[in-house]
Image 1 (cartoon, helix red, strand yellow):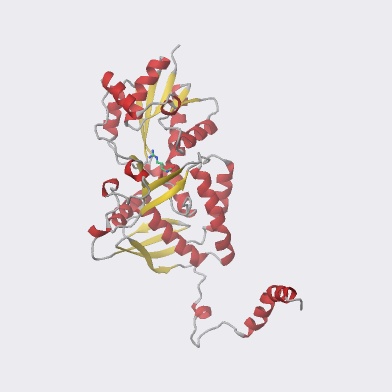
Image 2 (cartoon, rainbow, N blue to C red; image 1 turned 180 degrees about the vertical axis):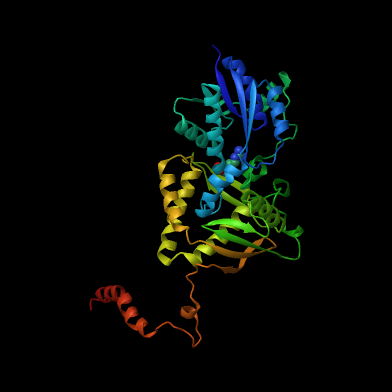
Length: 396
Ligand code: ARG
């Protein structure tokens, strides 16, 4: 009996070639799955290409809302930045895509799931660990990695089989969704080269940004955005900010990143909304969390980001960390006004009904209610261990 394989299908060269290749090699029926996580691609065109290449069935999911609700919101509450820079846009979408692949595999009674990742990146790990965590019985095929397919060989094969491949010649490897755009490869591999203009689509070069700043106010409740201007839908808020902040040249990350497989690589990201929202969220946390909470949370945030980056979304530790993070967010409510101008995003004002900032304590004016006489004894006791140690060193 011929087997059935569910293939995560982007519509690109690798996965288009894989439809034919897998069906010939395994005498298999191929069910292709495309998940819309806000990549802004023509799903009908992708579907057509899948059928043309020989898919028995194609399924598309509109998961923009699910992506925002179940993944992006958690990342905002966690101020998630891998190695302090990367908002995890690609990494966050992979477990959701894996979930849909497993769902279709079950509905279709498929034996295996296939993906188009190489053996050098993080995405193979994210897909495979997630698929196996959700259904350990499913086999996973990774032809690009395991059969060593090269781009040239793929193009030749596609021509021979008359496949309808995406005509755009590919200079970079790009992955994009609602939360960001990741760009790798090509001239970016040369660390001495600045990011060329042709790599960017969301962030406008500084020379071309408006000479007037833009101001936006983001309203948060329980740690997540609930309004921006007249927008209240999360997906729309993110989209709007990607466009506006990007237009002002904000949101570019160009850094050398440590991949899970040990490789250091130069990664470029266009992530205007992610960076702006995390900045605003952090600002509100400064007002509404106390000093002890603010000291511990970043350690756990870094763990959260590392876990998600490394493909371990379905590890129980992620839920443990989420439970802690969630418990810090009750009071994170209020408004932050951001100024976007010439590549920068700065906080110009903030307010919260739960603010721990008390003017009567902070003020240097005569209105102060802070009792300075208490500070004298406190300072002596606070410094005691340090002073004792100095005395000991001196042999006194
Ligand atoms: N380095 C990033 C990550 O691991 C981006 C990966 C982008 N993927 C791609 N196919 N271009 O999440």
